[in-house]
Length: 343
Image (tube, rainbow, N blue to C red; front, side, top):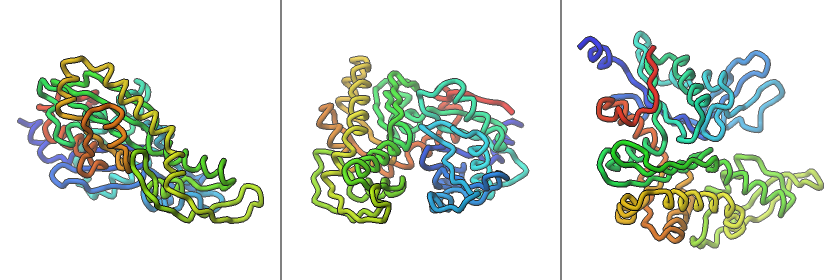
C-alpha cells in the first residue's frame, strides 16, 4: 500500500528518445513536450546555449565556439554527456514537482546492444528517475495505436523514425518477429543532399534536405508535378546558386532508402509464422513514425507485399503514447517491459 501511495503521487514520465525528436508524456497530463533532439553548447565550457527546436534553428549558423549537436544517432545515444544534459533540460521544462523522483519509461530500438541499452538506462537514472523501464519501439508503437498486443492474434507495425526503422509482429504481449534497420528519415534527408551534390554540383545543408523531402518528396506509385526552388552553394564556383527541383528527381533520390525499408518489411513477413501471417493478411500492417508520412509509402508497401497497409492517425505520437500506456498500467504490461532499474 505504501508503494502504491507514493506511485500515485509520482509524476511519471514516458519518453520517446528519438534521433530526430524527443517527446515526453506525463502521467495524468498527456503530451507536454515535443522538441528536436538537438543541443547547442559552448565548445570548451560545455555550457548549454539552447536545446530542442531553439537549438535546431541554430544548426549550421553558429559562430566559432558554439557547437550544435545531435546526441542521438541511429536511435541510440552517441554522446552520453550531451544526451544527459539535453534530457535534464527537457525534464526541467516540464515543471514537475521537484520533491518526488519520477518513474520513467523510455523507448528503445529493438536491435540495440546491451551496452546501448545500459546507456539509455543510465541516462534516465542520472536525469533523476527512481525507476527506469525500457520498452522496445515496435511494441510501444503497437500499443500506442491500439493494437491488441496481449491477444493471441498477430499484429504488425512498421515504425519509421529518424534513425531506424522498427518492424515488429506482436502476439501474447511479445514480439514474435522483430527487425531493426538503421535507416530512417535521416538517411532519406542525406539521400536528397547527395543527389543535388552529384547531379547539380550544389551543396545543401541537412535541414534543406529534410525540407525538400517534406515538401515534394514521395515514392512510387505516388505521382506529382510539384517543383521547388532550391538554394545552395555551387561546388565549382563557391557562390550561392538556385536550381529548380522536381518531385520526380526527388523521388529517384529517395529510392535507395525506401527500397531498404521495403526489403526489411518483406523479410519480416517471411520470418513470421504462418498462423500469424494469416492474421496480418486479414488485419493489415500499421505504419507509424515520422517517416511513414512520406507520400506514397503506404501504397508502395501495399503493392510490394500484397498486404493491406494503413497509416496511423498522428503517426509521430504512436511510440510516446504506447510508452505512456505502459507506464499508466505497469501490471498489465509487465511482460512487455524490457528492463527495470530500481533506484
